Length: 138
Image 1: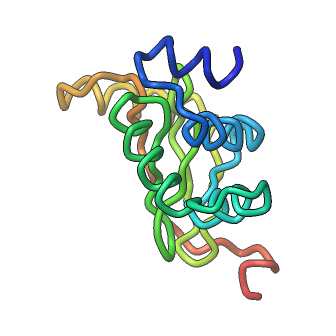
Image 2: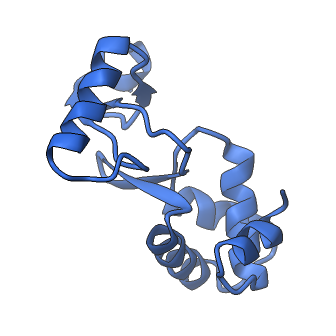
C-alpha cells in the first residue's frame, strides 16, 4: 500500500509532506531513523520546510500508532509500527537497535504488557546496554 493510501486508512490527511515522511520510513523498513535523518533525506529531495514538516508528521504518526518512538542515545529514533512489537536491545552509546527473538523474552514481554493492563499492540520491552561492536567506539 502506498503512503497516501495508508494515511487515508488511518484517517490522517494525506498532505505531500506527510506522504514523503512516511515514504522515507517505509523505505527504511525495520531500520529506525532519527528525525535528523528524515530531515536530511527530505532536504535532498528539495523540501524547503523539512524540519517543521518532519516534526509535525512524526507527532501525527505517533498519535495514530503508525510509528513507534524508541528512546536512544542523543534523542529518539522512529520506526514503522509492526503488528507485533518485539522486545529490543538498544545500545546506550551508538543507538544500534536489535530485536530480541528469544521466545522466553518475547513471552515475558507479552506477559508484562498484559499484567500491567497495557494493550500488546505496539508496546515492547526496551533493554539498554553498551554494545561491544567495534563501530560503537568510533
